[in-house]
Length: 133
Image (tube, rainbow, N blue to C red):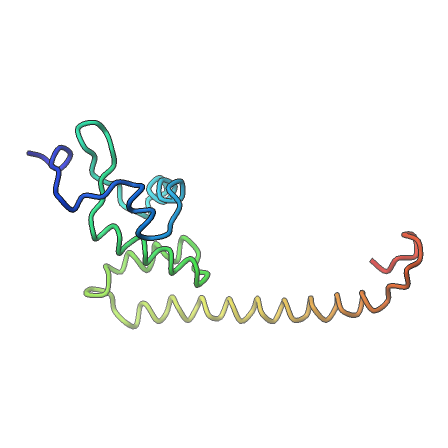
């Protein structure tokens, strides 16, 4: 039996993987297409099959995306080889860079909020040509 035709009791369908991780099926396919998630094994009939490693990897990707990491940052984190192989220093560098980006965005959003607040305060209800926006 080869990897494509071998069927184990713990093989999961894409639907089951989706339910277990909360990641949409189309998103799973997209992650495979862009090589963030490894290409899955397939049955003789061509159905994708996944294992527990895929569940952990996809859950990690989902959580990373929820924290705002870009797909390139997720790739970099996955490229470190997982918790048993990754250097804490390397993970910290990626996370620190991401945190810096977030702080910059927060600063930009605060400036935008102040500007919009001042603009809204100028609204008088006059017709559009005199509108401050």
